[in-house]
Amino acid sequence: MELDDLAPEYQFDYTKAKPNRFARWQADGSLVVVLEPDIAQVFHTPDEVKRVLRALIATMPPVPPPPEP
Image (cartoon, rainbow, N blue to C red; front, side, top):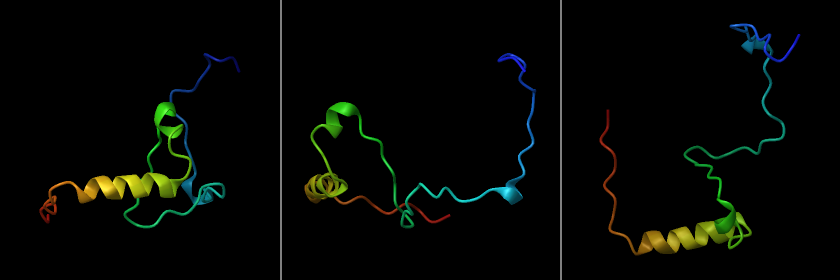
């Protein structure tokens, strides 16, 4: 099969799928963010990022909760 011999559609059997054993579990409500290289040079641990973001949040006006559906 050559590179441009791709089938128009592939069927994936989701019953055989397994969790990614290399991905760490994330708590409900967590958000994973990828830092751009210039920012990643400043922050070396997740705790450093969270500390600075929490300090910034403390200076901001409160955000109203989203409306319930």
